[in-house]
Length: 258
Image (tube, rainbow, N blue to C red; front, side):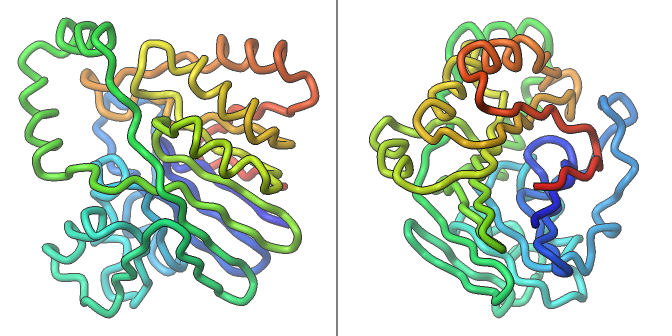
């Protein structure tokens, strides 16, 4: 059995049995962010190794504080690991990962697969600029400080349960075909980055046919730059198209048992 806790944005705390690990753990919020996240980075210390999908700030920003003084390993591309290295995290805690790399922790395994970041389309960019005004300069600064680098999706297996996580929705058809031959019990997919993100993510469900589909990264985590995306139209589309797939919209810090 695997337990998942959504931390907001693309972050998850995963518990395969008695152990724990973190995926893209970003919990820093302003008072305007919704839903509220009461946890702070220090609250996640001691929760085991960390796996990063890419280097953007809303995936990697909190990692140095989370691992401070813990010795926890961080797995990701060189770009995703760079902020932790700059912040003084010891080199021995950094685990560079690339396509096909497999990490065995005894009670669970983690495998990385090369992926791509979603392409921000023009309608989404225009809408963001209109909404954010001069705040877009903040987004530009964050993008320069925290580039995506190589994007990875991660497959976690424990006790016969397989969870596949995407931190961004830019996978090619060839990538999805490659992954389609593997069992997927739970598919974790983001709902940010494109004006037609729902249709894009449904193509993931069609290719991988998971037992459970969990949309994430739909929250208003950094207002006014990244407003929430109502997940319910996507949920309704998914349920109509794939009635055999259970769709779960997570709540902050809610435990989902698989």
